[in-house]
Structure formats: structure tokens, C-alpha cells
Length: 69
Image (cartoon, rainbow, N blue to C red; front, side, top):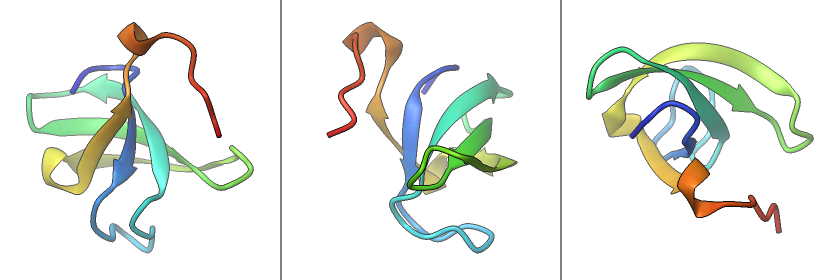
């Protein structure tokens, strides 16, 4: 996982549901990240420090254009 990767939650975190999407804005270590999470309207929910165990990458910048469908 790297900065700007798009991620989603694979388990609940601080009131956020499984599947909530976000973007890694800062990589502290191989296991700890600062992630900005978004709602279904792409509005920012909040920014959290979170560990890798809660996240799954669904898109990376090297994948090219992000298809939201």
C-alpha cells in the first residue's frame, strides 16, 4: 500500500462501515497510514490514522483512470 492508493474498509472502524472507501494521503510505515474516507457522494467523512489490517486496496495510480461504476 502506498500514498494515493484507493482503499476500502474490510472491517468496521470508528463508526465507519465495511466497504467505506478512502484514499491513502500519508504512509507512516508499512502498516500505518493516514486515510481520508469518503461517503457515497464523495464528500469527506474524516481523516484517520489506521493500520493495514483494516484496509484493502481497490485501485492504485498505476491502474490509470478510476472507473466509479
